[in-house]
Amino acid sequence: MQDTSNQVSAILIELSNLIVRYGLDALGGIVIAIVGWYAAKGVRRLVLRALRRSNRVEETFMMTIANVARYTVIVLVGVLVLSQFGVQTASIIAALGVAGIAIALAMQGTLSNIAAGTMLLFLKPFRVGEYIDADGISGTIDELGLLTTQMRTSDGIYVMVPNNQLWNKAIKNYSRLPTRRLSLVIGISYDDDIEAALKVLEDLLDSDKRVLADPVREVVVDGLAESSVNISIRCWANSDDRWDLLCDLTKQTKQSLAVAGFTIPFPQRDLHIIPPDALQTEQIRPS
Image 1 (cartoon, rainbow, N blue to C red):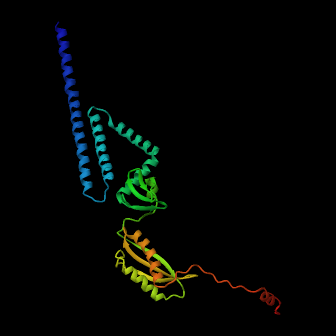
Image 2 (image 1 turned 90 degrees about the vertical axis):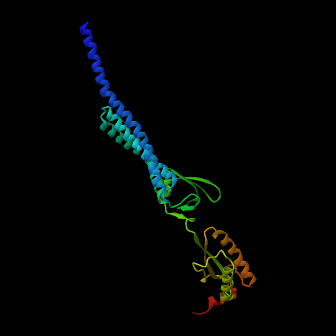
Image 3 (image 1 turned 180 degrees about the horizontal axis):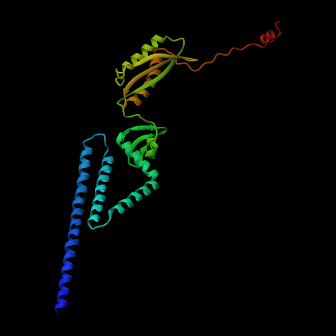
């Protein structure tokens, strides 16, 4: 009976030792997991708050960076919890590294688009609502994501473009700057008064408030074509007014010059007809 009592006491002592040893480890792991979970959320909020202080970072990019920071903290907390239970974390970290390399190799195209999207979001060569042309890829930007950019063409066609196709091209942004220059060439007859034509066109520009005074506009003779004297109009307008102003000036220059008596010539070619008798005389003339 005494031996049985001693054995029970020994078992209880060993059990209590195990509870104290592993119970504290388990309690520590639970505490680390809880603290780490809230710490990850806190890191996400701090990153978002810091990024929102800058006007150079898009909201999509902010959320991506904040989520990456949060999950990084969660992974580190998971490693700490496992080490709390005596698990060798070096092999786990090595396995995560190998898995990361394998995933990166399998997703080269996707990662390339993500990298391009990150740079586009950070450097902002274009924003939503702006019209761009990237080596033939043109349209108004509707949405810029990490993988693709969505745009619509001028004739209402939806286009989804992988980001790396935009990042590797020279991008022309037609909407970014507040003012743009417009150019218009119109021809008058060689018999017309050039100075008077220049004055008519100058007065036309003066009458339109959409034509900006600065930079200075130009109305100059820039070419002597086969059938006309070409006058070039170069002026500046606000980007939102440029297209309408170009259409109006194209119409009004023709009307104003016509009212003032100027001729906008058609292409002409002089033909010299030599009679057959003259050709025969030329052929038999002695040398």
